Image (cartoon, rainbow, N blue to C red):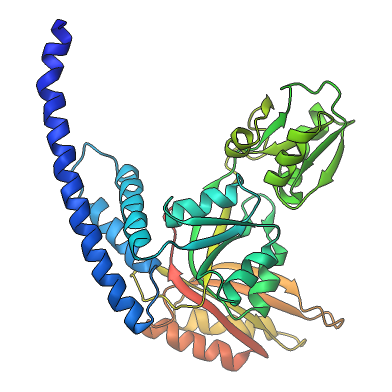
Length: 360
């Protein structure tokens, strides 16, 4: 035995014993989770409570004295809770697929790896899976920091009976991928329309002659590129690995700080955590000062608005729906008063949900 092995042996023995102790504790936690699951099953309560899991992770992060970093603590406990939920029942989580896109990463960052991933061909299908009860929750993109709102998600939130129960923001890194790692014989670049828009300056500068075509998702584009040497795709690292592609150029997004925000949709409501926001859809009559009048209760009750997005009402009358995020949970007294007045000032009002704000 070498001198270094002699020095490491007692430390390795300590780690082995600690791992055994951790496993015993994890087993004990899983057994308690089984009892929790029985009560939830009897009462019809949801298995996943995003606000509760966020409170657990936040409390542990605040109690953490190191040397593990807060994001490491969060990642570890997210997987512990995911595994314990799977003991109760394996959750189906639909997202915009196929396998490999940033949507799948967002789903795993919220629910962990111990779930049954359901890649869907469209955002509509994700909503349909939740509405019909095939899945309790789904994950859909709602906006990008460079290109703005995902229109189809907003339209479906307006029409659907589901609520927003959580959110997460994921950094976006787009790579140009092909079978060979070169553009030899490549004639077409494919990606989701948002990704093409987020990389248009780079594409205009470096490959202006290549045709571009929007597809349902970046993963779908990567799948096409894996089958056709004349096609290059814009996608992330996971899609590259999933479909066995090579990198032509890395991080070609025009905005180095590009991020996509995802929301978790479900039929449940979230309890307040102390760090929440509420999403709404409003519309007003087409008359002078209507929008100002509609939003004035927010100022009156000192409720901050963090987002305002308008979408055509699609009635052919130049009317608009306004998608609004405000700080706080709808059960908080000042928020509750502001929302009541907003509703009375609006021609149309719908609360899309109150949920814990993402820390990313």
